[in-house]
Image (cartoon, rainbow, N blue to C red):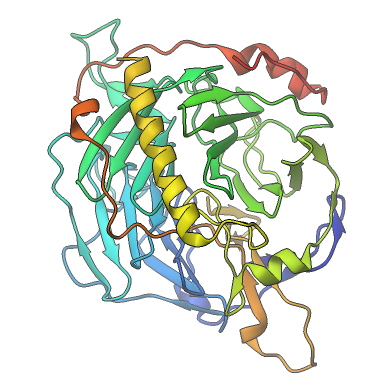
Length: 443
């Protein structure tokens, strides 16, 4: 396992990686296509499933440098891969989607669309009953918003193809205009039709919630029907309007990839690792400045920002699972709380009205939650000085607020798959691969 130091400046040609020697190596198994998430308001991250035998759900304590194999009470967890995991402020991990096959449990291929809920405070599991579950899905992204909603973007669904409704179920691409929102308080799915400059369908991409909670930034991914076709474009979903836009980005973008990870630290998006079209993995770290919208090569540590976003050595930040805020901003937490809730309500209404990895390389287990370490004040090895980029921090709570009106929302229905349009990023793929920047239409 490796850690990336965010408290010192470095260049992408020589990132500040260091080897981590965690205790309890015996429970760390080679794995791929697992789901992982940072446990909010703690110093731990959880890894579930993947290509491994036997199946395990484990977590890593970043302060003490120890892997744990918790005893989870209840029915056994599904042995699956290519699913997602997000956490909330109540210590719960939400697992959704994925598949099981000979590589996970030794049996026939099974696809899932039900929620599995792990309570990490009691280490118990439950299976929430939802009446209108959508078709099963893999290689999607899940983003926790305002600690009340989980947004599902992209991936491929296991369903009938609309062109062959009488045929067998198969994996089909899903349009990036067709979004799913799970309303946690009301235990229901909501269909959203997004507009704007709609990205091309994709799987194995990344999705990160902006620090102000106003938008979701996606990067890259693979073409749903082509294992060799990869993307390296950037799109933004504005939650207030549920419209996609593609910013004009300068600089040389990363090589096209899927199954990578993205992390938002201050005003830079770090894109790490991933798999290329030739099935070879990447070991690089790329930097996207969201203030200038340009790919840059120099990471400059903002120690003041990091100091204002840490609790017990843990960075209060998000990588697609929560909402953080600028500690130097003028709004207080309550103001941000209310505005974030208003945005997601407005976005859902607008969306409905508008349309009616953890990876293994060279035998080394690379945890795709970036562990960071403070500069040590003394020469003593105190594990409490370690930090981790938080992929699941939700600093916003909504305990007593009203929920989205049922009258303006359409429930999810399990129907035939709608063939997506192949707009936007496909026409820029070659240009992007050549290291040029593009300027797509904003609409």
